[in-house]
Amino acid sequence: MTKRLEEFDFEVTCRALEGVAESSPEEARGAIELAAYALHFLYATDQFKAFREYLHDVKEPATREVRIEREFDNMAQAREWLNGSPPEPGVHVKVGGTAYELWRDTEGKLRLVPSVSPKDL
Image 1 (cartoon, rainbow, N blue to C red):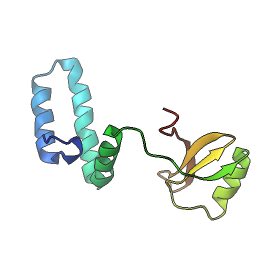
Image 2 (cartoon, rainbow, N blue to C red):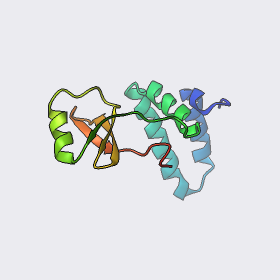
Image 3 (tube, rainbow, N blue to C red):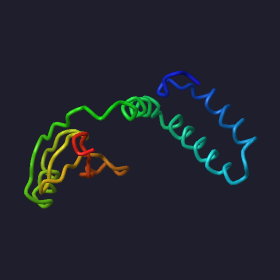
């Protein structure tokens, strides 16, 4: 492994997981197998870049400001906006005072997902 978590090597990490699994109690092997499959999924779906960015961000102190693009009084107004011409996923909005981030689900539909800002933490 490397010193920075986000700079992990896929093959080295998989070999390390295999070695740990061999010497782990039976009840821990399922969790290790799951972690190996999760890494393989990221590899197979070409999502390592996003995962590495996530690892970098998750280890940083929560100091980054979130910019709220739009505010809505209620979810009906926000859904109407989504049906219009919304921006790309990643935009933050507030609905009734609650923060949300715009995401695209597995079917390609835009969704507002509750979001916590660094200030909220």
